[in-house]
Length: 414
Image 1 (tube, one colour):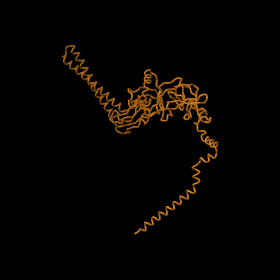
Image 2 (cartoon, helix red, strand yellow):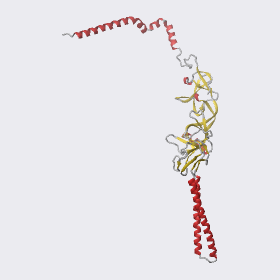
Image 3 (cartoon, rainbow, N blue to C red):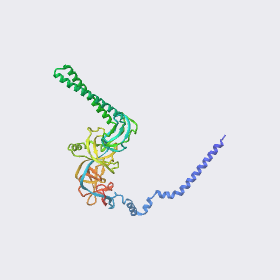
Image 4 (cartoon, rainbow, N blue to C red):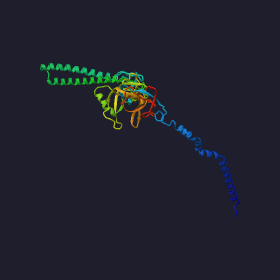
């Protein structure tokens, strides 16, 4: 028996197919003229004649030459900025990142145990070597000194008595009125008492030294840190933190590394006794913090980095430098006399190396290879076939090549 639902589904599909065919037919009839015209543009071009068509093609190709060149440029010149080549002295320097360190650092510790009775400093204060910083209860050490002095006085009196007896025994021996053995025994007693007195004197000095330790003094000159013990607390000589720390920051030391290629020049100057100036700058190189000179070098080159560590001494009178601070270091190696210099922005880099774009008398460009020497500020010392007074492009060089024609619109300031 025929399934009626299957028949209905086929009828519905047939109706939808018919509707879609009708819609496509109407759309094709409506858009056919526009599609035909779009697909054949050559007809309108041909109707305009060969002259108009060629003119139109000429208009399309007009101006397709490289801008600023003589070839196809329509006579247009590339605007650039240029600066004249100069001759001056340039300082050869090396930039590095350095770590500032104190010349000396000391932890002020109490040398005797006792109660902290007085604190005679403020945190961050500048102190001189020998200045009293704190005082410890001295009563126990005063008593020890008195006891030692008493023993010394007692033994000194016994020594004097023994010396007098020895003198009397010697007088009697000269008259043969006493046995020699008694004289020798008395002389031995005198020597024994002399040793006792010397020991007592040493005990007195030791007690006096212990008493002096109750006044804690600064071992070096420098700047104090934060105190580690409070007034009234019990301090001991074995305390690891001590009372306070002192850092000697005037002058200050800085450690930095330079590439090994500069080591021969550095060693020659140091052996000749010539100064190697050093400047310390902030992170942005906007403010100079201090200046000084190289004091010594490390004894080996670091294999991993190929650098040699140098240590320099910096003047820190203004107190702008702190231990463990990072600073931008500039080491002046030498001064190049009367070298050719160009602005740093005039240096170009390409497959042929470093070069500059020289503006010739006819405003054409000549690419000139140069060797870079030292740089100072915004001036780069170069070596190459350049002359003083020649103009080099500083802005717009990326669009130029050999033979390009330019127009110097304004001389750029280096």
